[in-house]
Amino acid sequence: MDDPEFDVSRHLQKIKVRRPPDIIIEQISDLIARRIIKAGQKLPAERVLAERFDVSRGTVREALRRLEFFGIVRTSPQSGTVVENLSEHVLLGLINNILNADDTSPEMLIEVRGALEALSARLATERAHSGQIDEIRKAQRRMREQAEANAYTLEEDLLFHLKVAEATNNNLLRSLIALMGPDVLRFSHQHATYKDGRMHAAANEHDAIIEAIERRQPEEAERLMKQHIDKSYEHYRRNGSADDHPENDGAKSDKPARTRRAKGAKSLREPE
Image (cartoon, rainbow, N blue to C red; front, side, top):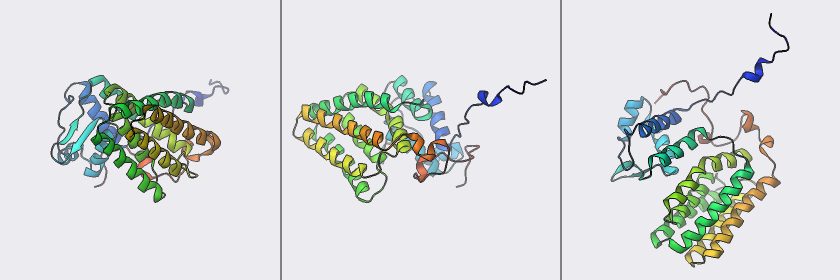
């Protein structure tokens, strides 16, 4: 006879709903692990990928956009989509972090991110060439446009930091900062760190960092970047924790659709 005191629920685990773009990224990861896809290799055209995966081109585009955003591939009209020239273990680590990132506390994230981002600002100030500074400016203009429109700026904010990291001309530092990307986005969405005027303040702080980089003041750029990360954390502390936001336990939220997991995705196939 079963023990009525036995609590079955303790042995149950959360079910992770897998979205079609995640499954595509997972397959690409597997091909990299098996060395079928290698660094510097061109991927098949978007149309071909859509046919082989049996999904819409929009789904393929979303998967490729995520891979490009986190520095795993690069896309251009001339050369198509090409895997970045990073080592195999770095590529797999980046993809794994996108798909299966473990819970990271805000304190852990702020400690590591603060140190790496500050170093990134200093090195970018010392090493960036004019073209790289233009890319930082371009990312910042996009974030400013989004802030002025009161739109979500999380991806644009992160892109600014990735462009600063690129300007260090240190691929390892760039990869480490990119590895934190999924955690940063998840943390920002969960705790609504972009609300209550924070996105406008962050845009102003970015402007000050860029000015220090352009003036070639590494110590000032480092200080401003550290201050920028610390202010984001202070904003989180003032506005509560994840428990204050219903989206963290599966409740309906007002987040953009692109940040929510698709409900009931059972296969890779979806309507065109």
